[in-house]
Image 1 (tube, rainbow, N blue to C red):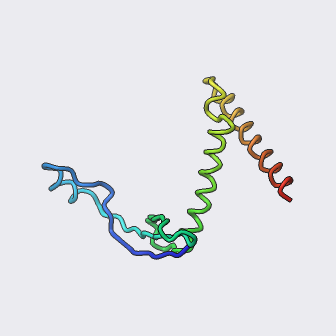
Image 2: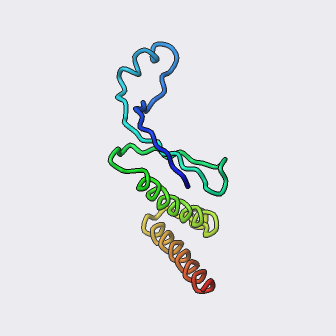
Image 3: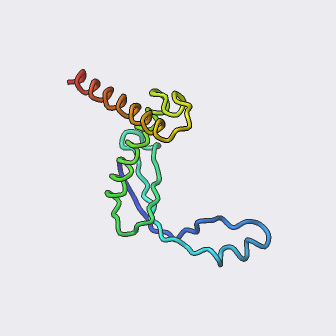
Amino acid sequence: MQEASRSFKISPVRPCKGWRSEILPKMVPQIDARIVCVRNRYNRKDWIALICTDMTIDENEIIRIYGKRWDIEVFFKTCKSFLKLGTEYHGLSYDALTAHTAFVFLRYMFMSVEKLSTSQ
């Protein structure tokens, strides 16, 4: 993927109509942010914009961190959708909920190991 970045000062809240539009921008501090646009090398029309508020991180590191975060999002989506995390257990006990979550994560790990062993 190709990338391009620019630095901006962004306001965390959009001004509202009326009296707030005059007062709110003066009360809210601006935040330094870097926007990295990443284009798909296989489909030039497909791209994403990543926003990072840590100005010391370079573009490649922002993309690497996003890739790791995306893997975590896929993990939780799989656990919630296919392994029924959140719908299989309906108790109120914290310990039982923690145990259920651990068992769902174990199922995911067993599935991952099985997938790796069959693909090799």
